[in-house]
Amino acid sequence: MKMECHVCLEPFDSTERRPKVLPCGHSFCFRCLQGLEIRKCPLDNKRFQSLPSNLPDNYSLIQFKPVDTTSLQFWCQSCQKTATQECVENHSVCSLKKVRAEEAGQLLEALQRDQAAVDEAFGTLEDLRGQLEALHGELEKKRVGLVAAEWRLQTGQGADEAAWESAKQDAAQAAPLWQERSNREDREMTVEEMAAVMVAGSRVARGRDWPEGAKADGTPPGPGTVVAKVSSTQVSVKWDRTGQTHSCSMGNNGKYHLRLLPPVMVPYLETLGGTYDMASVSSSKEAGEVVRKQSFEQAVGLQCTASPTVSLTVLQLCAARTAPVYSGYSTNDRGLRGLHLVSPQQQHLEAALAMPRLQALSITNVTSPQLQQVMQLASLQRLEVHCPFDAPLTMFAPLATPARPGSLRWLRCGVHPLVAALDLVRAHADSLEELQLVAASTEPYGCPDLARQLRSCGLKKLKRLALLRHDAYDGACRHDKESCSAQMKHLCEVFAESNPRPVMLCGACDRVV
Image (cartoon, rainbow, N blue to C red; front, top):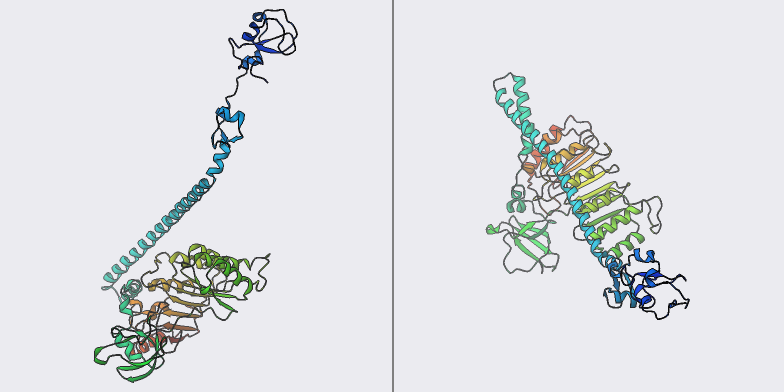
């Protein structure tokens, strides 16, 4: 519909430019019709007799409100700015809303990601709040238990023999779990103890009194092997990096040049099939090639914190091999059965837990929440967990019931404090056949009675118990033959009536690694 007069090309209005309808049907503004010398239609030249003021109004045009195109907010693609009326009439324009939506796309996506992250953080805080409340409840229960044990011990001193023995037993069971030592040095070997057990074949490195400027062990310094014990205070060492052999003091004139290195603790996943060490894999592309072309059932050395993306790629691709419908990785479609993770993040652990055939799992730098999650892996038969001494587990809340009770048969545990290790042992007491526990022979973990604490876990099928004298972090536990012999004797006595009766081994004396 034409909104302007064909003669003056001005927009119609309700006054001077009021649209009037001629008998022929055409409409013109009142002002133009008044100016006609001859009363005839400017378009078809048909004559009309009525005065312009007597012609009927075109109410459709009067009532119609012309749209201001600039209010539509167009974008001029020629001027690259918000379109004016001139741009709308003469240039190529598009919706300003569309242009801005395209420009805002990336920003909106980033904002949505951030919002999702904030929502996830809120969810994590809610979970932590629930865990803190549960921990508070458990701590309160333990506090009440300790107070009750103290009261029974005090009041039992004047009671009969049975009540007194019961009070002593309650106090003994409550107290040792909290006698953990915070000083790592108290459980490590002294230089004198290292010198006493250092023999040909022992692995050593620079020690406390290494001579300043000496470079026999290479640059940078490397480990070596004792090739001979020259005297009670002198040993001969061949260094790995240089191949040189020279004499070192281990007590001569009060100098101790060396420190004893513990045996390397290799994750023990059992021989389930081919093993691939992922420590050298440096990219996601390389990880894909390894999983596609290599046939293995065990993956070790996944450095999850150092290489989070690569580690996650390996885990996701390996998990995909167990899917019912899967193509491209046909060399081994059974999935992983053994896995070693170092410092896993939540995403890595979730990927591991999604592997239905995983039977053996080793985690270095495990955390309390991760240990709780591992308990839900129904297929697990072998478990190895370690945490550093300065990052102990806070296991005040009891461990969750295993997803499939009775499935875990083998456990190697090097976690702190001892109460956390005992909780883990207790959770699998019905099925464990072999237990390897990192512990010193003198005041192990600061607990005065390790044997009795282990016996109280209720182990029903234990066949083999090994106390390891070093941890996964090259830390040697305190150990000497006299205290070790006494400790082993006590263990044998405490487990004497067990059926089956477990074999007791020392990691140092019996060379269990």
